[in-house]
Amino acid sequence: MSQIPENKAAWLSASGVTPLEIGSAPYTSPGPHQIVVKNSALGINSVDWAKQMLGEALLAHISYPFILGEDVAGTVIEVGEGVERFRVGDRVVAAAAAISTNTSLEGGFQLYTVIREWLAAPLPDSITFEQASVIPLAIFTASHGLFDTGYLGLDLPTVPARQSSRDKRAVIITGGSSAVGSTAIQLAVSAGYEVVSTASPKNFDYVKKLGASHVYDYKGDTVIDDISAAVKGLHLAGGYSIGDGSVDLLAAVLSKHQGPSINKFIALAGGQPGGGNIDPSIELKFILLGPDAAGSGSVVSKVYKSYLPDALASGQFVPAPEAVVVGKGLEKIQEAFGIHIQGVSAKKIVVSL
Image 1 (cartoon, rainbow, N blue to C red):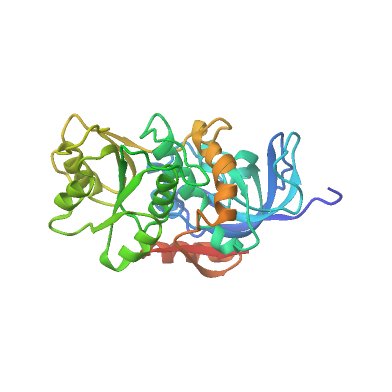
Image 2 (cartoon, rainbow, N blue to C red):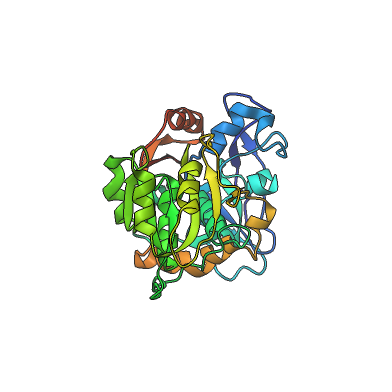
């Protein structure tokens, strides 16, 4: 590269400091199997504003000053040694791994981000950068919880979708209209599983369109019985929990399941348990996205390399939920935090650059 670009970032300068500080940041050339992406759109996640608000109570391993941000979409401007999947000028969607690795050069909230090539996928021209920026952390979290053998250990997704066998397998994914839920449903269906989900009634059609066979009101009085009836007689591969109270709901269904096999396991992506008594035979495990999850041999990397490119190109996987762009520029990220904190339903807050 003849001239080093001038980089800027939205820095979290110290624990609990508000607002983010917009200032210069080093431009770092890619190492082996890395690319540098000029970011065009950034997705906002709850972990970002929660880290700012909670300080050392969350992600205590992070050192300051730090660049948050996990969801990026943009254009490759430099490739490192050994990179074969991408060329300069390619449009990509990618997961920025700063939180997993405690390395700000891999943070998304800057103009140029160093990306591990196995955490990126080519972006078809039919999908805008803003639409794509809803995907990355959701793919990261959903893939690790669904497919890693330390969690639910489901079969990996394929293109075309893996055909469900005669012995039907099902998985329950709560919070189907959330960003992670929207992604997890599509991944599980592509892996050949029947998905039963929960949402508010206004989002039932949206969640079914993503591939869920059954969707129930998570606040409904009969939701446990309804889900139990939907999965009766099926191989139940466990539960993926998103949303407050979902752990108790899933535990109740798993403990009473009637079928040929059951995995009494709940992968917890977010939300607080309701405080009920959970069957001690059920294993509950929070989805931790540490360095191994971001590694080149992870299930996340397999989804990004072997599934997502073809799935996006064919329309088998669609960016969901809908991107809501709240402004343009790094300066808008703090404002976007405020909007996200107020709560969103079947939407994802995005900032353009």
